[in-house]
Length: 437
Image (cartoon, rainbow, N blue to C red; front, side):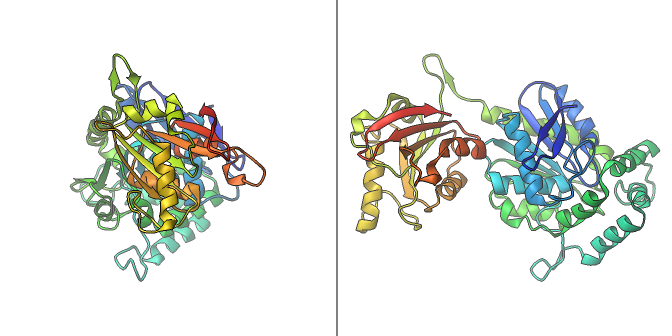
């Protein structure tokens, strides 16, 4: 069985069907990747690569004692994406999986992501609190925990036979096989893992994560969802994600991946096809594929602007827009064209010298700022406002005192999933080497 290994050694099982632009699915509680089989088969049959993993503690993945919370779930998803080196992906999360996808964006950004779909998803925040008065009362989740301890096999049977698929509504006719599949998947999960996941999906606040969404987003929710009420989930999430499209399924329950699979499949196909069209790179006969938006991160001075390596100047010249950010000079944001005081003039000069001779009339639009003193924070902040296709890093030669810059390019590549060109300079600003990650 194909598996990747999480940072703590946990094995994560995954399915990988079809060929084409990648679509990555995250499943709900207490299920596993099998719950996505209708959507995976449909999209794989229509020219997309469909990938879904079993969350830690679920299905065929390992059952570690620890790590049953959203930060680790998101990092596990990042491990899968980075190990398979997936780019231009559409992330689709159902229920708890929607929280996993949201936290992935919050922690890892959208460098590898072309779009997001939240299906019956738990964000933005399920639990009723003082600042979330419309949430679900704690007693509901305490009841799930009590049922899990007392007789979790019966708990899963009751959920499948009742509210999950809407089988408790008048006139409902949910097949025995569909309900049995839910029970079977639930019983494959680890007892502690599934128990702790209740807190993960109910008590995690995803509002900050949703604010970081900067890619096309589709929110799909049934308005008769008895597990994640529409007002708590889909409606609230769509309101927080700028530009999100909201698709409401009238009278639909929580488990629409099965009960409304034809409608859902059609909506997903339309979305991923649009995402594929948006991420198809521009190609010309003489230049091949070129990045259109280039982000430059540097805290270094280039002594001779005419000596900027061709690999850098060519990327910039072919770009539509360029953003330059200088971290570690000040934590205050700053427009690079401002000469308000001496603190900023040094940063301005560094930026101008790096792109010297490139910002000619008819060239790309170049802008810049001084970022946070932590280069990773500066980079994440910049990408949130300026989604880029490529990164150029200006760094100085490695020495033991500069631990933050040791393997910096590799870490940036792994974290943000963008091609990186590293320009290494000495203390006098002379270019020593150029490398591409």
